[in-house]
Length: 507
Image (cartoon, rainbow, N blue to C red; front, top):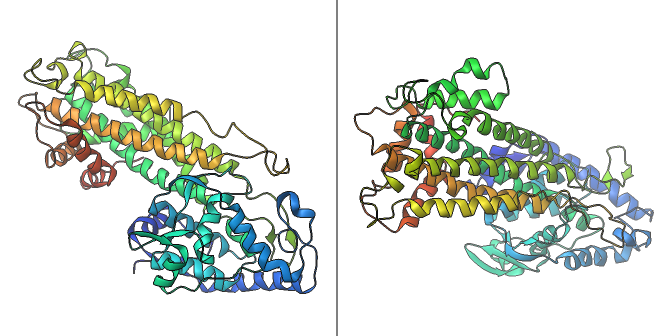
């Protein structure tokens, strides 16, 4: 069944993608329901006893020393949401919004947040029935969680804000009505439970990570095609070299290249044509491998975060309410900065291999990979465009996590900027996809200038997949459309999936 059952403990990256992009339904587990009800009972008792507890019977942030009466709690929760909805900029894509809702629901299902079961079920119903709040991408400092964007997530639950429903942007109340979901009136602790967490940065970063894993596989495929097109030297991938510097990513990359070009007549041996290749070919395992190790680190950290409680305060099983700092996004901020840097390097090296393919001074191929140069420019400007994206990535790769601006009257005096880090990683990966797609297209064009050749076991499948959507470019065409086709092939995962039917590409 196309369903993901959440309990707060074992959500996986694959589950996120299935819910976000494949519209899997979501259901709370029985144990999660029991934990949520128990946690809510503790909060209700605190309110009944009129105890002063942060976030339940007090104001928030700098107003934590202001007590709130029981009768004002509902007003407090509503005011929290509508006042904190201060986001700005482009709306987050629907798959990201779906991931945000899923991650918030999963965290709440752990039973440490004090939310009512009915309120949590409303959130799950929005996901299952396709009510997607309009959430601006800017406005989070990444500490005290993603307060502003998560407030936008909650607005339609209150009959406020806007939401996408069945492909149209309408008012939040109208979307809820059309979907048959009742709006809610939040009570003590619920507003804070819904918005005090790291789910926006984690959602953006988790999907970027998934796309990065797909891209780095395609990066190995691109590199293997270029090695063949340039008659590269296979000796550089000899595992005896890599086993004595046993970084996992490096070894796996060397294995990938050897498997992809297995059976190729184009690759050469040391001394056959030249003694050494340039670094961008010879050091593919070292360069790609380092980025793979970074991806694996990021995956480990993300899978911890998506099954974590990032609220404040925490309602413990023993009935205590602890005010801590699990909302602080630093673990994700550093992770997504690292992810962005790692994927920027994949674009860097891909653009340099593209240059080696089109620059006649660096190879034995026609200038700019075109038969009738002068009349035609061929692949000349593809490198310009790729270089522009690589340069932009270098700026985006500057870490967001090294910055902090105090907020809330200096109560929140160190913040993570984790959501900025995640958005930058997402943008870097999108740029890198375009660069790698351009290299793949150029490598296939270069291969067509070779004669009497046999492609490798994996590269043959990749080449044929490209030629299914783009023909050899004899004379100049509207080039961006051709690159678009290869980018779509890469971004959809179709290229890597087809190759993996014959050769496993490890990351």
